[in-house]
Image (cartoon, rainbow, N blue to C red; front, side, top):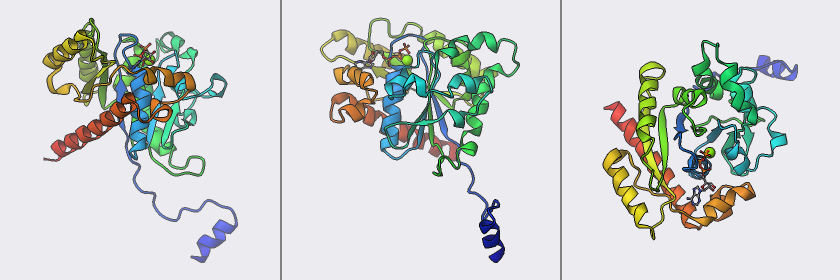
Length: 295
Ligand SMILES: Nc1ncnc2c1ncn2[C@@H]1O[C@H](COP(=O)(O)OP(=O)(O)OP(=O)(O)O)[C@@H](O)[C@H]1O
Ligand SMILES: [Mg+2]
């Protein structure tokens, strides 16, 4: 005991007890190569809702557009370490992590540099695994962060609207894919291609990969087409479609211009309430998956 005190007083490193095992986060990638379907909106608001119910969440902004970073109020000048630096191997993911206005919600921001990544990594043998390897180290490196000690329990990856190397990295790093689908005429267009890519990644890079679920977004009850799309998607994807449907809601689209998730901007609006329901549904699905894995 006195030895420990002596060491502490002398300022040397003291290891009092073995550290608890590092928790492994659940990694969900939000992917759909179609643009404007609600990937970023879902990453921000699902991340906020998960944090609100006690999870410790990291959103990884993997889109050069940087909409998730902007929508969470991260100024461009504050993106000193970005996901580009992480993918290039010049920084750890932990070094890119920034806090947000939401307790327990963090973001690894992106910059436009990311759009040049594909060419830069063209000859790197591990190019598809850059993100996976960074995520594996996340909680190891995060154990003592700014004098706080915490492990991330969820990582949400916001993908760009493309099935390129960046998205393949996300799929190789993820446990499961969450697919936002907009309730519009061409909703199912491109879904087969996306599912094919997921299958290819599962067979080659990441055998554990699955589809977590499909979330229908921007539903408009006054529009017959929206109801038709819900029916078609449920017929095609069955139980994979979450019960929660995200309505089209002007508060959801206004919130990013204030650099806030809609749950902070207007907690009571129908959009916020839908994202809270989606978070509970996802947690429930996770519990069912875990229970199924143990029998
Ligand atoms: N539930 C909603 N109600 C109203 N507007 C919404 C809703 N969800 C998303 N939007 C708006 O739709 C647009 C596209 O959403 P978002 O940026 O989340 O899509 P995305 O799939 O990430 O797009 P990209 O492919 O360009 O990355 C944004 O302007 C967003 O504010
Ligand atoms: Mg986006």
